[in-house]
Image 1: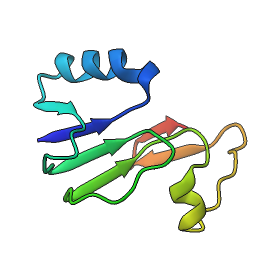
Image 2: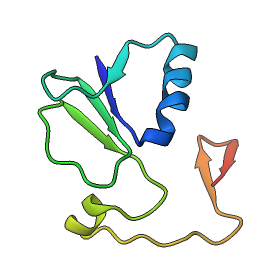
Image 3: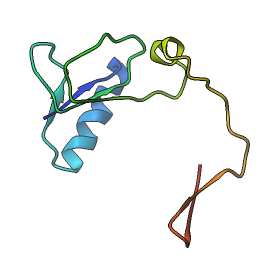
Amino acid sequence: MIGVLAKKQETEIVAEFFELFKTPWEFFDKTHDYDVLIVTVNDFSATNARLVIYYSSEQNTFDIRERIKIQPLSENNFLQVEDNYFIAI
């Protein structure tokens, strides 16, 4: 089961996303165990999920605690996927 701990303003889009892909999920419930937990809130304490994915467009508490440097990318950055595919980032 996938658990999602999202900001209040993101709840509608989260529900639409998982409904679109017919994926079993629920909003985070601290009494449940999850295989995967997706977190978009800034400050969240540890959980017993097998995999926690922190997602944010800005530096958060986790980044600061783990000393992860955040810096903007310049234009024209690309990620090469296999030999022939490029995805603009």
